[in-house]
Image 1 (cartoon, rainbow, N blue to C red):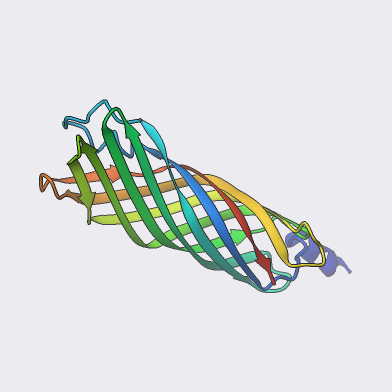
Image 2 (image 1 turned 90 degrees about the vertical axis):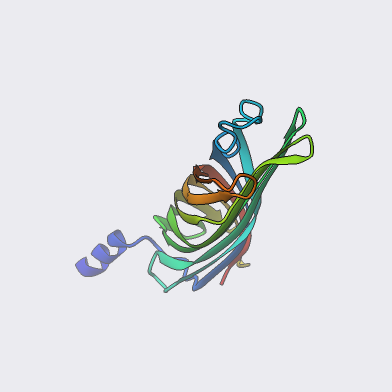
Length: 203
């Protein structure tokens, strides 16, 4: 009896889900996504300082019964489009990451920390003025990771449908991005806060 009590205290109650598959919508407020690439250029001081990258993605997580730890993959395609006083800014970030979560509560409500580490990336940032590109960065090497908290709810207990949200921090470092206009290389920081809303199945 004591061993059973210790087991219950050590591990949250599980919903017995083996696979979680969900689609998500993400927004990231990237730090200096456009203003940084415009330093020393004619567009400096004319682009918005904080602009969101947004887009769709998907997660697949696998866990074992009665074990509140899950592992899986995440893929997301994010973009940014903005226009201000004749300045056009575009950016994109495509990311595939390994994913892990720990559910402090794992019943009808799922709550706990979640982390990811990027294993494949592509990105680009372009700023145009008067129809001509001022900067157009691509290539280079990207690294990224996220740390956040997720909350899932099963609104219909008899069905495996889940809805929820996740929020946290993303660190994305882009080294040696190459500007096709000038040929110069630059390190760009696409880090910021993020939020996700998702809909999926727990089966």
